[in-house]
Image 1 (cartoon, helix red, strand yellow):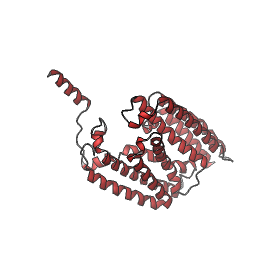
Image 2: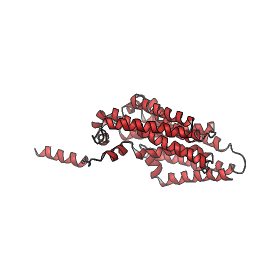
Image 3: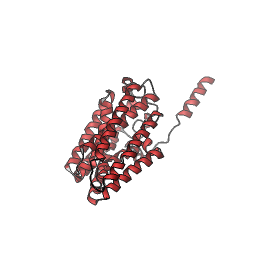
Image 4: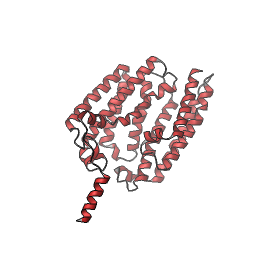
Length: 305
């Protein structure tokens, strides 16, 4: 009897009862607003092209940002509706609003449909191209949630493609030229972040119990992938930034230094046990933030010279 009581007390202390949220807060939480920071990638192409200060370009990029926030929120809702039974058995996911019963599956599905329709309408305000990118993102995310997340390699490629579509969306919305080398950097960078995430997850739970597909990977394999992808990113970025001629060439070329150091710094943080949440790593390390600010500052300087 005494042992049972101690177990019950320990369970309660480790998993405290959370107060129920109202429908509005529950719906907002279910769209995972913390993840919206990923959608800031839509400003990458306009910023790299030095066009972000132009009013019409900034407006199109903002439309892309709003469209991706709506689209990602809608797909999160549909994913949580489909996984609600499995989430209820998970130690952390059971606190998600739908699994916890704070938001009904019917209400979440209706909200998801509204969010996805609005995402398409907002995207169309910018351009037909952006609408196609948003539709591709929704289709990709749906395929990932239903099947690809359980298939090794394809799970990494699918998530990376989601980052990639965000990275090009701003350029497509504003109809800006996108260098093939920039596309390689964007695609490689996306693969690097997702591979680092899987590596960190595998190191955190070696038996792969936190994500079924992790059982297919080994630390050595993912470490080799990270090194290979990092090499591709560095070469592609250097080629891209040395292509520019004229007065603005030297700041853009100089941006390669903080960029390469940033890749190295991120790799070090992943090796130290971080990387499961890329946004937390990027925003939580002052050195990484300083390198990113320096790189962006040099690119901005090159665009105005």
